[in-house]
Image (cartoon, rainbow, N blue to C red):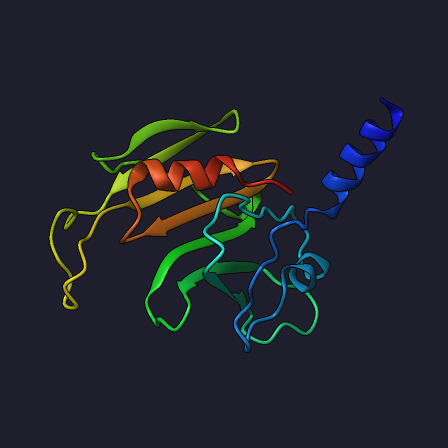
Length: 164
């Protein structure tokens, strides 16, 4: 029995965590974490074939970063599938006057989802528009997620998987 437990534990340790695939020109999440004064949240439920590009403000971070965007692309594609921007929540003024904004809960936090006005139509490349903008505050970080190509449910799954 003891041997079985040791074998089971070894198998768990041998399973690698899903690695993040960065675009060749991107900085890493670890670099961003060193330069921000707020918590950084990373989504856990993402397709492994997506590639990540991180954009910061200022564009070339020397010291501190005010905000950043995680932009996810399918490999060899130039159109982002998902963008997640983050910044210190104390610097954000919320104005939820959009009549289409729906109140939702993400990881115990109140948030809002607004569907795109052109949802249900096709873009200039023939891709079906769905999704919208999802935003919430989690542990002092304002998070805004937007996608033209993911459904509200897919966006919520990703949002609920975000951890420090």
